[in-house]
Image 1 (cartoon, protein in one colour):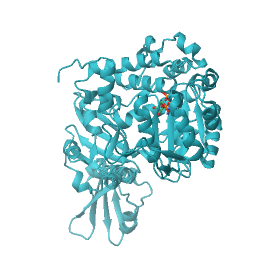
Image 2: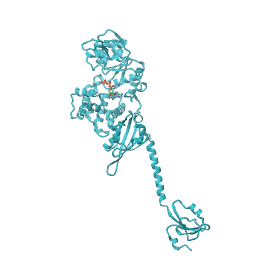
Image 3: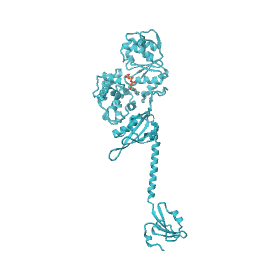
Image 4: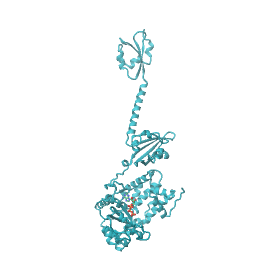
Length: 536
Ligand SMILES: Nc1ncnc2c1ncn2[C@@H]1O[C@H](COP(=O)(O)OP(=O)(O)OP(=O)(O)O)[C@@H](O)[C@H]1O
């Protein structure tokens, strides 16, 4: 039977093959699809040339051995290809997330963990299965981390960066980003985190930490010495530290004399011994002698039966730091000179001379030379202490240190108040560099704390800087002659405590907010006649 003529106009390719004679018939659609077809083309040859984009159906053709081939474009093929490409992209994404060095932690809009990567398993010491499905609030309560950066992002409905602590004391620099749906609901929160040691050490040239080279392994607060002036100070201090010399630190209030004294101790061969600090101005004359040299039993009414060693003895094997040495009364200066010269002393009320092996570092912000001339400070003691003296320049003479100090104080605040992450606007830094800083580094530290605590949002902007906080006053200009701007400093400090007292509900909260001990908070509130306003 001949092929029906309507085959010719069908939209799908139709072909008829004979197993022996090959192609008998191809309609127009087939000829257009495979222009190289000829009558007699063998079935095998045709099959090999049929592209993968066709679905081919075979039907018996009449009662002979010939067969009819009906071809349809394979519509599922592009879909399969796309699915395969999607699968590959997904696998690639999975791999990127799971192998990323930083932690990736994803939750839904209720804080329920959806996915974590291997870095998260490493940081928390738990497997994915133990984390997925759990709420970050529960994990926070269990102490796995604190605070929960995802919890904060959910609460604040914005990107949040905090310093997170893990249960084994690691510190993570964590950022969480909420992802919103079209209705404004939080669909996902994606958080990434990195260990602080890798991410947040300020690699500022000249920045050094006191543990550097000390071999003690005990990290103490960083001592910023970015400016050339401070580099020279540090170089001198390094030499003093190695040589075990008595040394006098000079400089205005708040320049960092105590900080440098501790640094010298940590850098010295005595670093594993005690560092004992005595503020000679903090005690009444009547108590200073026994505080310094201790007393024997029955030395005075109220003295303990067994006697008590003084700070000098407690410094045995380490460093004795005598702060505000100029305030030591004349009658004690002789006893101190005796100790400085012979490293031996007698307790109050005692007769036994005790040998004490301690390095002495003294500090003052007074013009001691003038005091020697005026007869209020013993010349022999002055020359003994002055053997090596290091003068720390005021902050206004080393403005390059200011941005680095600001960074350090912000970092300190992150550590104590992980939710208070603030960036500082460059114009604020410029303004702070232009100020004269009568209270030196301490005043800058207080100001940065105040800015962090009292500004909203995560940036400190020029408008946050109240001009009265940076008012130049005459003290700032004349203090080089040894006048201490204590009034100014006390005023700044009082303001800080007054603000804190207004905002907090207890002395405990004040202490928390200002990063000081509760005892200090209570003392300062009392000193400035402040009381807590808000009721708990
Ligand atoms: N170079 C520095 N790097 C980092 N912090 C510093 C530096 N110098 C001072 N500070 C900080 O400034 C504050 C005041 O410093 P410090 O107490 O050492 O000053 P001081 O000169 O001993 O003051 P005072 O004369 O009142 O005894 C401290 O909190 C200290 O940590």
